[in-house]
Image 1: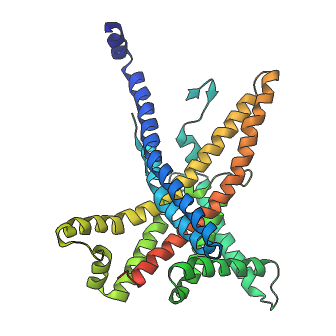
Image 2 (image 1 turned 60 degrees about the horizontal axis):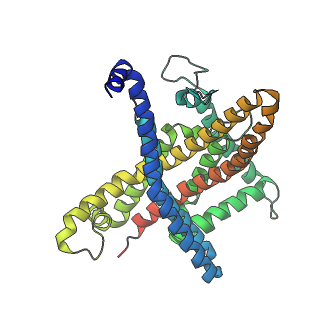
Length: 87
Length: 257
C-alpha cells in the first residue's frame, strides 16, 4: 500500500492525466445513459403510432425527429463537456 | 497519444487547421473558412442557376431546387408554423441548404472536414435564430404578452409559479440557442472523429505484417458503412436545425393557451 502511495507521488502527472481520461469516459458514459433510454422510448412510440395510423406517418415522423433532437441534446452536452475537462 | 500501439492524433490536430491566407492577422483564412466560402457560393449559384431559366416543365437544377423548396414548405413550415409562416420560406430554405452543404464536406474525398465541427458558425446561426424568434414574439404579442406566454405555462398552481418561471426563463432564453448550436456542432464533430478513428485503424492495421493485413477489412468495411451513415446525419442535422428554427418561430407566433 505504501509502495503504491510512493509510486503515485512520484508520477503525479501521469496519475492526473490517467484520471482525466477516466473522468472523460465517465462524463460521456453517464450522459449517454438517459438520452439512450429516452430516444428508445421516443422512437418506439413513434413506430407504434405509425403502425396504428399509417396515414399519419408523415406528421409522426416529423414529431419523432423533434423529440429525438431534444432528447439527444443532453448526450451531446456530455460529449462536449468531456472535451472541456482537462487535466 | 498511443493506444494499443496505434498513434491517434490529438483532437486539436483534427479540427484546428493552419492558416493559408493572411497569416497572423485576425482575418486569417484556413480550410474551415474556405469550406464556408464554398458553401455560400454553392448555395448562391445553385439557386440563381435554378431561377434564371424558368421552364414550365422543370428539369435539371430547377427540378432539384423546386423539390427542395417544396420539401421545406411541406414538411418544415406547414407542419410547425402553418400557412402564415410562408414568409420564412426563403430564410429556412437557404439555411437548410447552407448547413447541409457545409456538413456534406465531411465525406467529400480530399476535403473530408465538416465546417460545422468548429462551433463558431453554428453558434452564430443559433444567435441569429434567437434574435429572430424573440423579435417575432415581441412583434406579435407585445413585450409583456410575449414574456407572459413564454414564461408562464398554462394551468400551473400558484405555489410553484416562481420556480416554473425561473425554469422556463432559462430553458427558453439560454438553453434553446445553446442546444441548437451544440447539437449541430457536436454531431458533426463526433461524426468526424469516428471517421478519423476508423480510417487510422484501417491504415495502421494495413501497415502491419502480411498476415494481419486481412484484419484491416473489418474496420474498412465499417468505415464505408459509417461514411454512408454520415451522409444521413449531414442531411438530418440540417433538417433538424431548420425545423427547430421553425418550431421556435411558430411558438413565438401563436403561443399555447
